[in-house]
Image 1: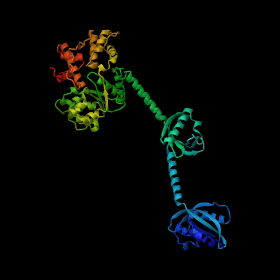
Image 2: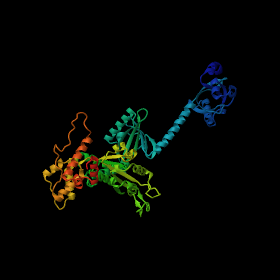
Image 3: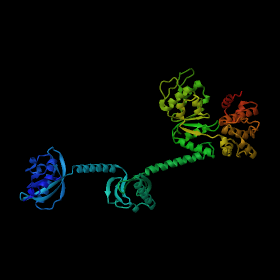
Image 4: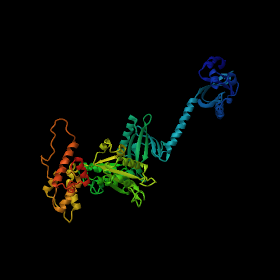
Length: 565
């Protein structure tokens, strides 16, 4: 009796692929083996098994087959490759037992197809190889850390992953981190594992080359491990420190009014203005300065220029209201010799003069719509042609515009292009009128006394005069104050309109209902104050403008607007 008679039904119906080997020859195969190898049974039986083994694996299989048949120790299970009739290479894992076949020793060999598993392993190994290559190319220190704080794997910035070896693999974070940083690191590990979010913190590290700064990023992995990525940020910290010191230096200059020339102000509104000036100076974005006449719009604009990276270029101021409409183009864009009668030489325009610097456009609301379109093209990089010129000029300029009007209202009324307004009003700076910052009045008066006074001793302003100054409305703002102090120094008197009585004030509206807009009430108050000043100067407009601290053209424009002849 033998295996071929006692166990033939089990052999044929097994779900495994099985062959019988004897003397290196295939003696029998079951249906599943035929199916796997894709040969007919008669094509397999009585042929050497080596005919179907991959050439690279023949020596291994032959050696282990002979050892097993000689009762020498061999692995119970091992993988190798067979080649099917179709030429496909299939990975198998085999397990063999000794039997009797025809009364002689033989090997009953079970085959388990592991091709998919091998391919998955090869793909994983390839992926791990690529990952290792990427990790080794990253100039960061990468460590794998257990939830307990134990380091399992370490890769320094020079590459090569290290497991369980010096300098840090196998160590605990507490072995080298200071207590406070160790606690911060453990908290970050806990947060990363609990919430699966990237945790960041920074720390200093003493090295032979000096103290180094590192940024740590903690990323949760599967299970209870995290990946720690340490990047040397020493150079970044040095640059940040240098930038911070520079900004602190600039801020000190601004807040102490040294870099700002004569910008004086300790009140909250002016401190906010100074902060905005500092922020605006850090960029090259266009700026628009809002404020009433005499609030110092040009002074603030010059400060932004002086504190910016454009300080090496020119600050070119222009009062747009003072340029006749017919000369706008030649003033802004310049002209070439012979462009018109009297053009006996080339002349650069304001935009070209401000190249790599700042063009300050005061009263920008006075520019007509056609000129706004041409300026918009120039400041957006489209360049311009000088009058009579053929070659375009492309200036690199920053625009700081100023106005005492409401540009949005001008846009609604069709007196300003919307695209022009939005292009130049990136950063708004609003200057408060003097009446809203009266706590600065003593400092401003002292400044003007120092600036305008002569001799070793400053003039003294009596307390009753100071009270009058404090009670004044200051419609002409800082310019009016400077004129008043100058007159006091030279003529030893303060000329201010008499305080308004109830009879001087505009009548209160008698009708009930919705209150009138504030702008309308203020306009009435301004008109009444201008009329009182004209009466005090016997309608001498130049003298009235001086007392009000207004430019004569500004006063004439207000008179025309209020219908005062």
